[in-house]
Image 1 (tube, helix red, strand yellow):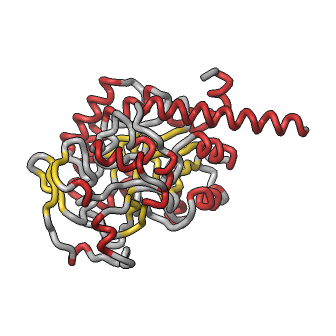
Image 2 (spheres, rainbow, N blue to C red):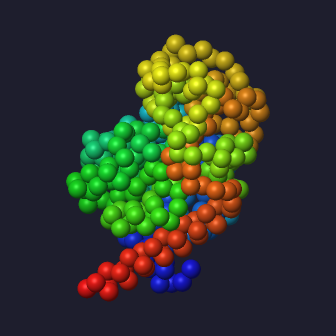
Image 3 (cartoon, one colour):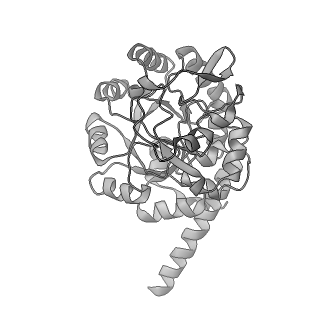
Length: 344
């Protein structure tokens, strides 16, 4: 990729975050571990370690492993609404002790947490799904807003299409706005930049890579899927607040629901172990997705995937996925600039 191509893709967000490409790795819990984060950083993107509900010791181990692999900047993703307050306090404290320079938060905006890490000099990226949440995050001190659309895989906060929502957010803020949801290739990246977004965040496209910590079964299912093979439901809700919807690949659990995809009370769901990660049971209806270390009924677990799954043809190194996206986007933007120049 030539310097001119990279210049077409570079936005002020790259200077703020210290990356070369405006492509962010989503902080996928369990999946976005140090190996994937390092690969994304090495390819010029901006990595996020997905550390929701993880122990402070695991966070420390992941941060140290990532730093041993790369000297590029990164963020740590925590989710206050889905984390016991005592554990959240310990997570934040350990991150600050480690000198983590950026945090990525999601779901409900918790001003006290944002303000605490900002006071320590950290950058804050906040993923939001509603205009009200965008306002709350900005008021709390966020530096970057990640506008998540309904097309996204995993936990989905809002119900608006990603590009439409990003335009709504941009109309009310001067902060950098990143689009998340269904973006898996250079066409999506080019469209986001043409819209005026500062960058994109990718989850599903980077889950299906060699370095992700997802189970090979999950990766294969994504490659074989189309966007219509995903479904939005709140049945995989154990460990999260009631009503927290997720986009997953259809499986035996969603098939058994029929038309009743929503309104599942976690208090009323059975606690049945269907898989394990070492000595940790994984429950049917939990938000746990199958990882490299998982054994058991993988098919019945939450197989997170966004609507862009149909445009992911293979499992490749994360660096190759980013390079493909960047080269395709740069080519499309160059063609657009050439057409506009010829018409001037």
